Image 1 (cartoon, helix red, strand yellow):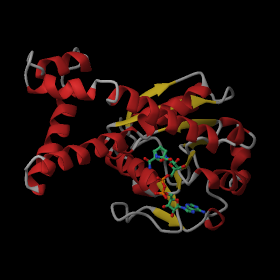
Image 2: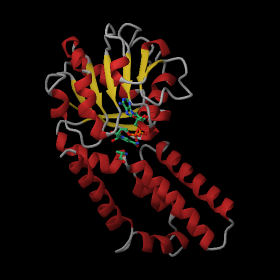
Image 3: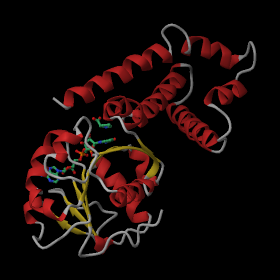
Image 4: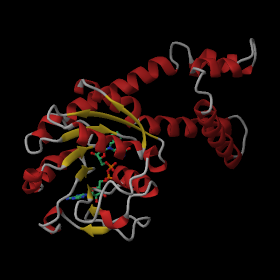
Length: 273
Ligand SMILES: NC(=O)C1=CN([C@@H]2O[C@H](COP(=O)(O)OP(=O)(O)OC[C@H]3O[C@@H](n4cnc5c(N)ncnc54)[C@H](O)[C@@H]3O)[C@@H](O)[C@H]2O)C=CC1
Ligand SMILES: O=C(O)[C@@H]1CCC=N1
């Protein structure tokens, strides 16, 4: 997805909050052609090192009043979204596309000010165009604005629109937080390797490359399910089967992830209150 023509200096893309998630998406957009002069970052911590040429302001009230953003992305902490929406309210008459990526924050609180509101749950692989971007739009969002939202998300990863906003809490539990589970798995594999006799650097390298290799193999095997790929590793009565007996057992991944994703889902529901 090429973003070079989607925005211009008078009608820029404005990112409010350029931290871990905002920064990941910004990196993805700039790498896919977003012109720095058509991008505005609002963050008291400034723009990240990889985006030194973008226009930046420390707060919403420092943004020039004559700016007419084509789209505003809210990537501040969930508890700050309401305040940010209030501070941006003077833009409402120009009807920009407003996208919030905040966990738990419902469309209703965006729609109260901006008709063209979209709620997105991204994840940090967006930085390399490999994000999972799940979106739900307010009823009033035009097809043209939905297309613009799709273009922005497609520049950061795989896009899925859902109609039912209540799915967004479980989405957050699976894909929004999901990268952390894979990194935690990598850490745990390395630690287990050390326990079983490997030097720390060797165990870390093995765990990291194994996760990278497995993810890339899955990506390049679109016609194989995860189960089929797992079976390819598993010789009957062999080493993998011995490990999978534990991992797929009563205290294995299944029940553990059900509990973990349940906790993330409930946390997302709580953030809405
Ligand atoms: N980190 C992740 O993997 C994901 C995060 N999210 C959502 O993204 C949002 C941001 O989360 P993170 O990036 O992790 O947090 P973060 O703390 O890394 O980033 C927040 C940024 O907002 C800035 N900020 C603080 N006050 C501000 C203000 N008044 N105006 C503009 N910017 C301000 C901070 O300086 C910081 O750079 C949250 O709502 C979170 O739910 C969603 C999906 C994944
Ligand atoms: O941990 C969080 O709350 C955010 C939302 C999904 C991933 N990170």
